Image (cartoon, rainbow over all chains, first blue to last red; front, side):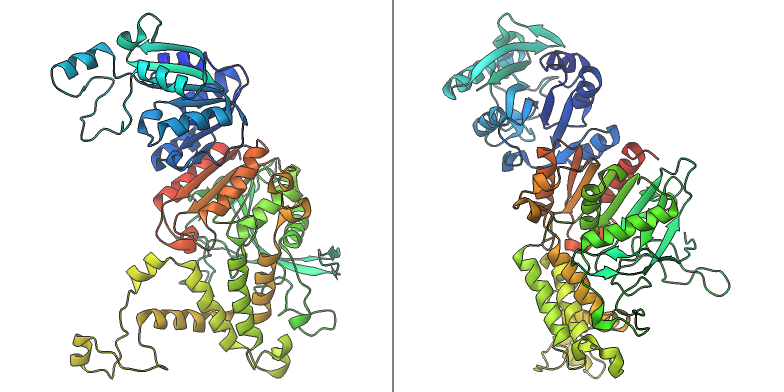
Length: 193
Length: 387
């Protein structure tokens, strides 16, 4: 999911010069792109030692923190944008993290694998948990502990009283606005309080 | 590979006004440098030392024939040197012995105004005073701006203080296993160590040298307490556990059965033996007055104090980029304290990276070899600190 096209689609949602917090920033590629191409500032948050080193090597400021311990390090509305790209599904308390995201950032941008994408539905109908190019894990070794669909997330956002600024699906680097719950392997939501 | 380091010293004729109000009319700083200062004079890295270390950061001392003396490596030899994470092929690295220490800079063991050693009369010095003296040395060396200032523990406090006191003179601050101030528990450990020293009958109000004695018992106990707090429970259990110390006079049969000897005075457990050994070794080379002064400097350090406890406001003048590193099992300078610094830097929107290294060795970890820790520092210096 962290291919160049996806990065560009997500970067387009981030205003020029924004102060950005990238939760689960991986090797820092997206943040490096935002800093270079859109004049952004900010920090990545990552727990993995190797990825933290990769960020330092790229010159991306990175904070090694466990997101399951919360975002108490960050003040209210201290960032223009908080990114959670491919992160939400790895966190124990996705609902709290969603609320924390919009507490810390004026805008939250979340992207996660959409389990209702039709190849996934097809596999479940055949009686198996989905294993695809986008979801390469078996049920017993997947880091995705919170699996959701595009439609599930719409419901969660409504329940938490947040506003959806924009939402769409992404598949093969292309934006899918028509029937994203079935057409897209990745769900993208732009939310605010 | 061993390489030769040469200690130097510089006499500073300008008086130094200390935080306490006292003035040092003149003083000497012992220092070492490694690598070459470039033509732009902008590749200097200052390494600040902690409690019992010195200006001898890296390399070995030469013996009479110019060969490296065995076991004379500097205290951060695994971090600093040619090809090391802080690479002396690229950077001009400076180590300075702090005022009040006992390794060559002015302190209790050097001559005071009367010509006699200062002893207990050496003025109380603070982290801020040390930084000021280090800045005076850089002036004398013709270095206007540091590529980086780096330190662990109390050395990290100096790096932080540098960034605040001389914002224009520091491009990067690397703060390892440190804290923005000591907690009550931490001050308490220091106080127990100090009481052990000052209640030693050989202490003589700090003028022990006039009496031809040294308060070794106090120093030993101070060091033993310190050592406990520098290790983690895990590493102590792994290294020593409940192992008993085998004695020569103990029969093989008793050893095999690991019998207690039922003694309250003698060493029974390995951990006791280790602590006594560390205490004995320390008492032979370290000065008791220096121990009191340096632990006090630790206690007093608290940049937020002048700002109503607001660390973010205290760090507001800093312009440097920061690398902050903590170690998961360090309970003397816990990761939470490093995170306090990071939070204050975030509030000031400073460029900061923070790593918490999962290492079992407690506070000591900052001096030990750890591939992740060293790779991180290596990448930071290679990619971000421009020489």
